[in-house]
Structures are given as structure tokens and as C-alpha cells.
Amino acid sequence: MNQLVKQLKNRSGITLIALIVSVIILMILASISIGALKDNGIIGSAKKAKLEYEDAQERDRTLLNSLLEEENRITCQLKVNTDIQSFNATLGDFTIVLEYVVEKDGIVCGNDVIEIPITDVGEKTTNIEISVPKEAVVKVKEVYHSPNYDLQAGSETEKTIREEENKLECSFTYVYNGKLIESSQK
Image (tube, rainbow, N blue to C red; front, side):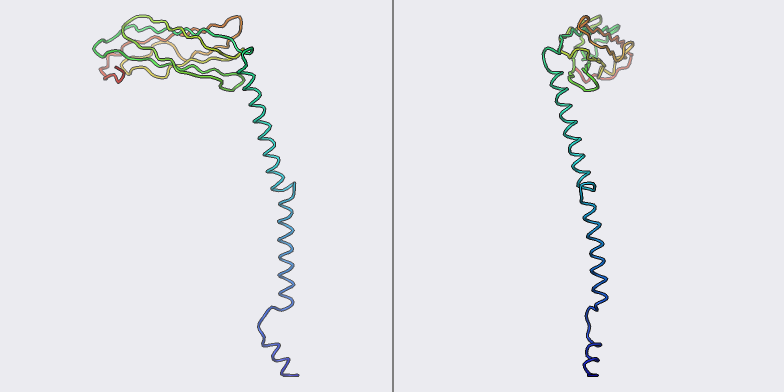
């Protein structure tokens, strides 16, 4: 019997205590993982975020569709006046590029660029007809002009368009600045 006890003591392996401790640790880890995955944990948060995203997407889609419906739109006359007070013919023609942006309730629902070719000194009027939502805000700003000319007066023009006054007029005045920078717009 002494020999049997010696053999059992010399055996390598897991003791009953080590096995119980391992099982307890696994049970603790399993309970933490299951708690995190329940509806109030990670999965619940992901489901809630998905529902909020889908609701916001549907609200945006509804608003955009209402902005695009014809009965909610009016035709706006956009009149752009450019005045070239001095012109250097040796530099050649150039183009002024303006951009207009249409916003309604903070959502951009239209934009485009207007290219105005300049060939001589003087005033030039460009009329554009655009379709905008009622009560929209239309902003017009200069995007590019020849580096040989300075924008003397005028800046971003902003106006709320209402049905009774569906016109927007903006003016930009340019003067040759005396610099002989080669124009890339010829």
C-alpha cells in the first residue's frame, strides 16, 4: 500500500483543487460575457444605434422628397452683374467662376457653377433661371477670377427666396491690379 501511495504522489496531473479553481474562473468569465451580450449590453446598444440611424435616414429622405416636389418649388431669377473697371487686353480674356448654393433647413438641395467669360472692360449681366424650394436660402460666391484682377467690391451674397420676391441680384466689381501675371484662362 505504501507503494501505491508513493505512485499516486509522484504522478503528474491536475489536482482536484486546480480543477475546481479553473471551473470557477471559467464560470466567472462566462457570466461576464453573457451579461455584456444581453439586450442592455453591446448587442442592445448596437440595435438601438441601428434604429436611430434608420429613423434619421427616413426623416432625411422624407425632407429631401418634399424639397424636390414641384408644388414646393418656385422659379428664381438669378441676376449676376459683373463690372470690369479696367482691362489689360494684352493678357487676353479670362473667366470669372461663381458658385450658387441652395439650402433649405440646413440641407444643401442644389448647387451649380456659373462661368462668365470676360472679354472687355464694362458691365455684363448674366441672367440664370433656377428652381428652388420655397423659403430656401440661395448663396452666391465667387470661386475664381484671374490673378491679374482684384475683386473690388462684392462678397458672398445670401438671400432667402420667397414666392412674392423670387429674384436674387448680386454684383461683383473687378479692377486690373497692374500685375503682369500670365493668365491661365485664355
